[in-house]
Length: 116
Image (cartoon, rainbow, N blue to C red; front, side, top):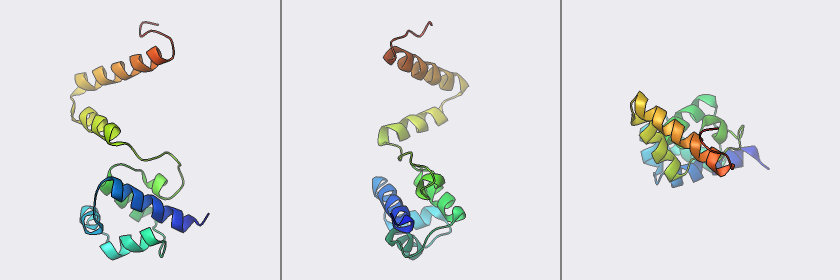
């Protein structure tokens, strides 16, 4: 596998999943041009750590380590992104409620109960 090509594929897939044009993504980074991002996507250039961090922040659905192929954890789904946005917008009481609900759901799926 050509790592530069895979980095480009991951970046393009993440951008498409967010329904962003190259120009829109470039604007969200405040530092990268659309031609540079296009070069990354085409495998012409390989992004560095700083660029991967800027792109991951702008995309909001992937990590820099995922973009750089250092982590194979896939990007977040639309539902996961919405849950994360809601969690971040909640106050401390709401965050605790969300955490407890998630923990009890996992315990339920694993055959236990929330009271165990």
